[in-house]
Structures are given as C-alpha cells and as structure tokens.
Length: 191
Image (tube, rainbow, N blue to C red):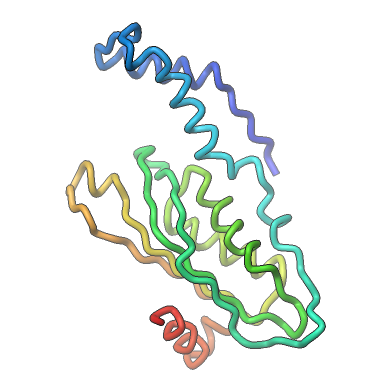
C-alpha cells in the first residue's frame, strides 16, 4: 500500500492562497488560524489513506458453523467527493454470507466502511471497494453493500436539490447469482 504523506505546511499554504484569491484578509480575527484548522480537518477527513483495509477484516473462526446472512445496516459515514472536495454523507448497509466458520466481528465491517469513506471518493467506488475487500479477505459465499448518500455538490451548487439522495449497490457471489438470497437480504434492509 502506498504511504500516505500528509504535508501540513503545504496544505496550510494552499488554504492561505485560496483565501487570498477570494480577497480575504488573513489577519482578520476569524481567519487567523483558518489555514491551520482546515489543514487539520483534511488530515482527519482523509485518514483512511493511512490504513490498509485488508488488515481490518481478519477471519474469526466461530465454534459454530454459520452460513446464513449477517447484515449490519445504517452505518453512518462522511466522505469527500473527489470532483468538488465537498462532503457526501449517508448510511451504508453491509451483508455477507460466511462459509461455515469464517466470520468477522461486526465492528470490522463498520470500520471498513469508515476507512474507505475517509479518502477522496466517489460513492460508486466506495460501494465497490467495501464489497471487494470483504470478498477477498474472508471469501464468503457472497457480499452485498448498499449505500444511500446526499451529496453537497448537488445540494449547494449545480442543480441545488437538497434532500436528493443517491443509492448504489454492489452484489458479489450468491447475492448476485441467487434472486431468493438477494431478496431476503433486501427485505432485511427494509426492517
């Protein structure tokens, strides 16, 4: 994995130049520390670049065999759209069907969504990355990821449609091939 090199001084300089390009006075009380604060925000908002997602989903072997759907829904997340550097936010639902005794802790699925969301992103890519990482890491019978999000680039600019939400899904394995399994998982999401 590529090392994440955050250069705080360079980020502060960029924010300073941006504010100056708007004609702002950086000596004004409210702006004196803004470049530093914004740089810290971006360091935190993009912290997912510091983590190898495949290390988050180690396989746990349960004493009981379980080959039924495991679903975590309504996982809140915040991300930054790489096209406009504006936030998009919403909820993710992650389901998988393990092979016998290969399960993961539920917090690992939540953390996986968080790590991928804390990068410059596209919602479509975020959805795919979560599904593909689970498939590769624990080799379940299948994975389903559904993400619903509001994008501030559609709310604040462009079409200016607050409340409009985008839905994306990624189906792998049995969720893609078996209509009954996909329908069962989708009905669980509606509860």
